[in-house]
Length: 244
Figure 1 (cartoon, rainbow, N blue to C red):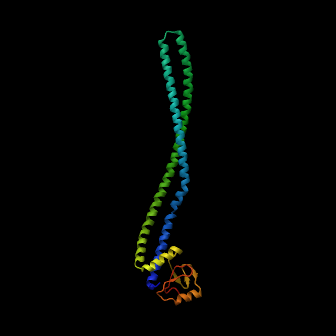
Figure 2: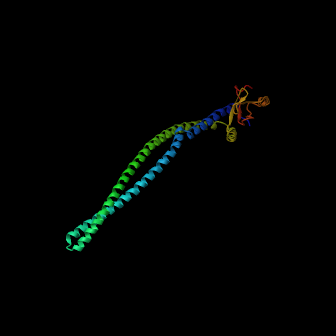
């Protein structure tokens, strides 16, 4: 393939843009905030699991408290009813039966109120425990939000740089012969590098000094011949720095 030395030299600018674009992509993928967020994720999930468990336990205790309170109200209603009946009946036998039932109900009421107090204390403790977990979640959530905001801001800055650089890259590529760019893209896709400078006999594509036989072959090539690096397979750019 033939291409003017000036066009070949422009490939170094194209390669520089592609290298920088790859660096920016790597920077986005490896933002420190992203790593820290990933580190915090197990803690976030653990706190969420604790919150779910604490919420469920509290709901169960509240349900139990409502049931006990309902039982207390039922017993209180029966006590009131029996007391009213005692006041209204003249039968000694009925009074004795009602008083016996009232004694039983009084014991039942005492037992239920003791259970109610115990459950209320448990509800109070579970509410405090849930509040503590929610405070931990709020604190961790604030840290996560701050990290996400910092990550997004940094990613936005990098994206702006990338957009500008991609536009420059398109301008450079658009000014070069299509077949030269196609070869560059093919070599870059295959080997990771599309073009590299030959500097004082060293290919910057492989950072290896070329052999004398390779250099002799390159010297024999015309200035507009497109030469590939024998080591990196990138297009080898020759200029005044090449030492040929």
